Length: 115
Picture (tube, helix red, strand yellow):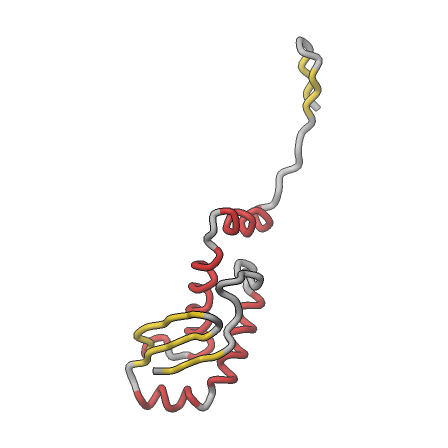
């Protein structure tokens, strides 16, 4: 406790908040969650599909992940596994502490479209 004698005011020390609890609040306050979620989805695609070196472009809108690949062979192989890849991506995102699942604009992946 800190006691200031001349004013008769007593100030109490506050306990510091852990960084892990402050960062998500800051991201929401600065309206950065949608952009961060999109980046997390793209990173999860690279991990789940294993086709990062063949991915040319990625785009996410309304629950659908659009991916442009440079190889028709890779695209054909991945087209059979889209449901499995989608589940892997969502599992990665659920484990990510910085992914905000409650964001109304960018949430979990519902569909994957390969181009």
